[in-house]
Structures are given as C-alpha cells and as structure tokens.
Length: 166
Image (cartoon, rainbow, N blue to C red; front, top):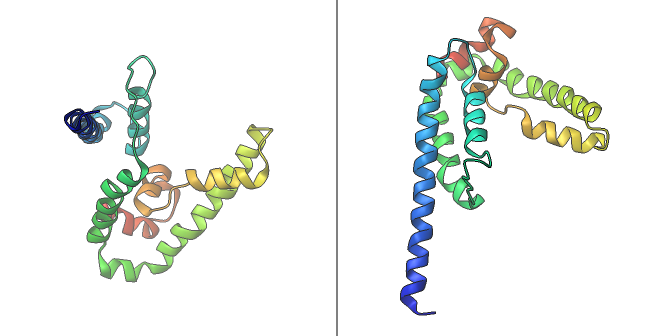
C-alpha cells in the first residue's frame, strides 16, 4: 500500500473517533435538558443509559468501536478532577462518618442485595460472579448514589454533602 493511502485511512479513523466523541458529548449535554422537560422525575444516569441504549439500537446502525485506553484518558480524569474540585473540604471533614457510611455500608448492602437478586433471577450463575456483577452495577460515588437512591431514603445530614456537590 502506498503511504498516502495509509495516511488517508488513519485520518479517516481519527475523524470517526472525533465525530463519535462529539456525538457523545452532545447527547450527554442534552440528556440533562431532557430530564428537566419530562413530566415525571427520572435520575440523570438512568436517562443517559436509556439514550445510549436507544442510540445503540440496531435499527439506528450506530456502531462504536471505542478503545478502552482512549476512554480512560478522555473521560475518567476530567470526571475525577471535577469531583475533587467541587468537594468542599470543611464539609468533607465534618461529615466524614456519613461519607464513609455512604461509601462503604450502602455499597456493601447494594452488592449483597443485588448479588442475591442476580443469583436468584439467573439460575446458571454462581453466587460469587453474581456478587462481582452486582459490584460493577453498584454506585461508587456519592453523587451517583444520591441520584439513584434519592435524598428521602436516608437522614438529611447524610445527604448534606451530596447536595452541595451537585
């Protein structure tokens, strides 16, 4: 193959990756607007999952081959930085016990509960892989947890830290 054809293929792949990232950014941005317009309340992560599932539906033909290393570089560091930047230090230290309780106890309860549910619903799956799947599905940060569980499920003091980070 001539070098110009190889460069052309590489540029086309870069443009496809750029276009995919652009579409994903637009969809994530618009998902917040969609959740506010709905006549019923739906957590933002669930709306984003639903929109992603619709975009991935076979009739739309959107097939994304996304390199995991590229995902880690593009999305995880900005999310972690934004969470760290928004964290109020005084409230973090003041509500340390509640934060630890949310981070550890509720995740453990979720993993055990969902793990047994998966084990009960899927007869062929052993218990330990069911727990592993439940661990992947459980919310791991306070913002995601408050979006899924809601503020009424726990004491107001426990959610004070979560409210300030939204």
